[in-house]
Image 1 (cartoon, rainbow, N blue to C red):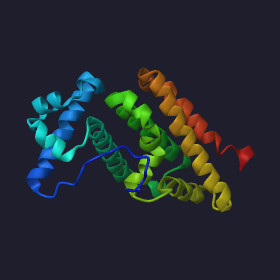
Image 2 (image 1 turned 60 degrees about the horizontal axis):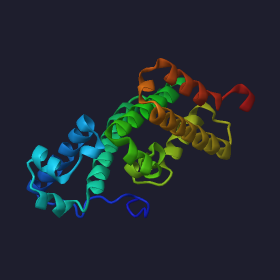
Image 3 (image 1 turned 60 degrees about the vertical axis):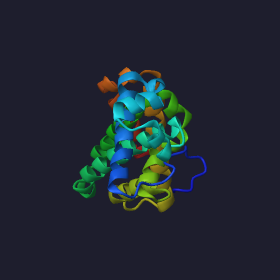
Length: 215
């Protein structure tokens, strides 16, 4: 997953010493704060130096460009989201009803899409193929098709007689439909995240892949 040629630039090198790790974390935290409070266009080496307390020369020692800083902020946001989501999943996924599991997927999509749009909608749009939830989960899990396999396994517990190909197709179609719908709706109007109707519509769409007429 680390060798994807389409991924935006990131760190020049991984910090090995504790002092270096703290410095990189300070840069990323400062960048996140600037992006959320003033917008992605406000991010500069000057603003980063002021907020993080890290000299410009040290910033460039680890980050080749401001885009690389943004990319690492996005990766950090995604990693934290999926770590928290996986913790919630671990205790409930095996016994969860179909509708409850789909609602959890819908909620996760709305939450993460909103967070990334808030950070920098233009940067997200430019790299939505790489930072899209489907691809991002695979990257987080460091496994190709990790998202599809997770959904396929969940659906198989509810439909044990459904053949593998049908399960795989439903996992991919449903996952992509929720991802793309939530992304485009929230990109066009971020305030819709506060509308309960958005969740209801996305959940209804997800459930439609398991309508009795299609089983």
